[in-house]
Length: 354
Image (cartoon, rainbow, N blue to C red; front, side, top):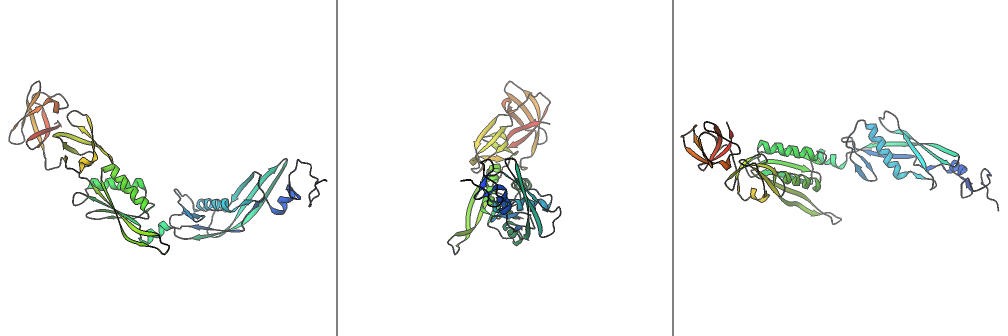
């Protein structure tokens, strides 16, 4: 029995698709190429321009125009809600919105598809409503509420300027998106975050750069009506006294701290230039002593040199004589040259020539 289109009477010959009792042309004319909602609502944060799609807020990294954000939000909403009226065809879709948007507007969705030698297209108008509401992150920032706090402290009574600059650099790398507030206190820095993940990320990054100690506690622990456990996370990050670039004494040798990680400290000998790896725990066991201003620079005059020892007199104070092994001086010296050194417990450590 012959098969024909119930609307136009086209006879089915196998080369032109039929859908049910209609040819594809009449089917698209009757039902359209796509099933499109007549109205759609977009939720956009007026503070950061993130938008909500399928219940999830999408962060916008770079924004040049609010229309770009609206277009992306609309496109993602339509991807979830627009369906082809029949499967199996390649359908091209284009969305058009006004160049300037100040409120609700009409968007135009154009769909095209080709079947054999025939092309089909359609245009559908979609009413777009825009609802501006604060996203959860911006709501927490505005209300000054937080879920976690990172308390950065030093073994000293307060953070030094160098420590403060280091922490500020780490926070710039992390980004301010999930940081509610940064409090600079006399005893240190408090960093309040919208979630546990950001707080732990900050703490671990500080530990990796400084060898800091981390301690976690929870407060205001309770359960919701649904039985879910909630609390505020408090992470204490304690910085060691020593930072990268410091001069230190370790096992009676003078070193510069080249690199600190979460597991190791890399020291460079001031006399030989050799690198040495030690566990980060030595920062906390008192085995490394930082050279501070309590050890002023001394001026030494070389008065003699042998095959193994340099003889030098301290000329800026007391004219004490020192015998310094040649292995502790990383360059050649001659009689009459002046050296810079620090004196610790009566022992000179040469820093360089004057």
